[in-house]
Image 1 (tube, rainbow, N blue to C red):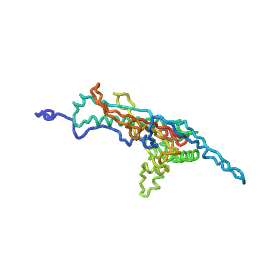
Image 2: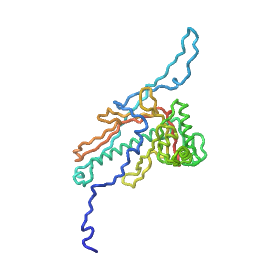
Image 3: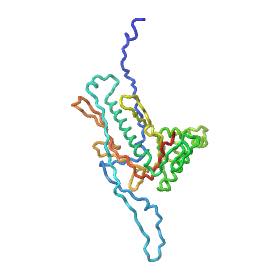
Image 4: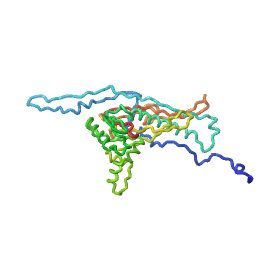
Length: 328
């Protein structure tokens, strides 16, 4: 063995120009991109809801000379409310750990990123629970492997399925039910994968592409379904218990949603959903979020803490459509 050995002439130390942390990109999450955000100064309050049945009736009548015109009005529900619950998470940085940390570790920056990701995960989970699940929307279908009946469709990973017709049927149903045509589509990643590889989708794009190459992206899907945007839920969650090997799964999963969303919120402005963000929560940002760093002397630690205060609220069940298990 040659002397000196490799271990004699070099002691491994952490590199200062690289470290590895598989932190999900913010763009993986859609919860803040689908429905309009409503900044609110109070944690809870009420808002008015108009009954659209009164607005869509043809009630004009012929008027004889010297008689009154026919008139009517509309109902308003003043009982709709929101409540912005507060979710919180923290990471403590112990003085001993801080004093002993090697370069390039930056514990404050790392703790901030760590807490921010926890908040993104929580908001995405709430979005999935409130909106991307069965039994929420007026139009609700289940994907099946064969023989669809009733409120079922053939799963879109099957080449014999008809996803384009299924979506357009939902658009037609919503327009007839509410007078509004859906303009935002949300897909779980497995559904996105199935749609961009479906032969019907590929053929539509291929024959409309002058280059002769069927390049299917989100803009192509939006044009195909005539919606303003298509969003893909790419976020993942580790569902394993702490200390066990990671078991990651898509938060969105095998689902698809179709919604009417107004360009901007306002008076007498309907939407499938609204996000009420409590900006009056002492320093909270426009999404009802705030992050703090403060001393925990009794623990000899600095604490980095994040909070989100919001209510992802269903506004109109008629302005949404949903497909569960729409791929195998």
